Image (cartoon, rainbow, N blue to C red; front, side):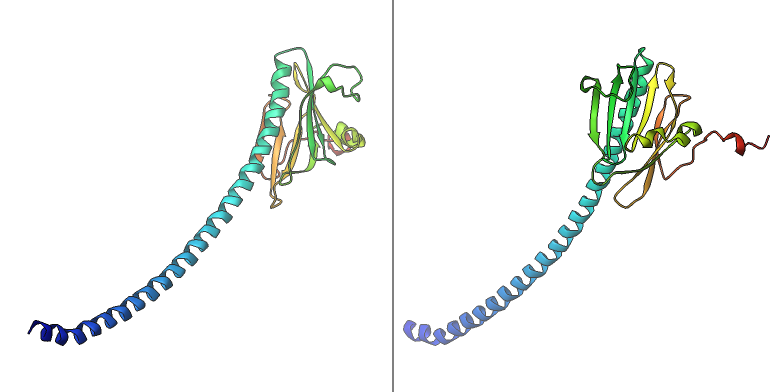
Length: 207
């Protein structure tokens, strides 16, 4: 009797097993599709995150290099104010480099290796566009540019010999101005190509 019941249930069990296998196959296929979609979505999010991160890194790299340059300029002014020594920041527009040195020789055109305190470059995503001085005679003489495209800011105990601005461009060619104020020794960074007060030539003064 038991054997008859078992034999009677066999077709039903076989049918259920076949149905479960089909359902399992369908569930497996559906899960695999979901997995593919999830991977694609995660890849898109990862790509977006990497793109944003790269932009932030470039932005921070630019600002880091600019802040390094501003700190070098401020270092020259502070060191000169606290001593009777003279310092000079030389900006090479051709090589896109800058050097801070202590002036120890009467010959200002001669840079001794032992005078150099900082020697650094601006980097690929930071470029010096131009330099403008607040001394019109100095700018008109072109002293800074006749010396192979090098602009020089000198600082002594009483402050900067002359002020001006250094205009830098980021990788999107957005300008930033490093403003050197000869009156208070402060070097500040401002967004944009800011205007500075410059003396007028005699022929430009109406009175």
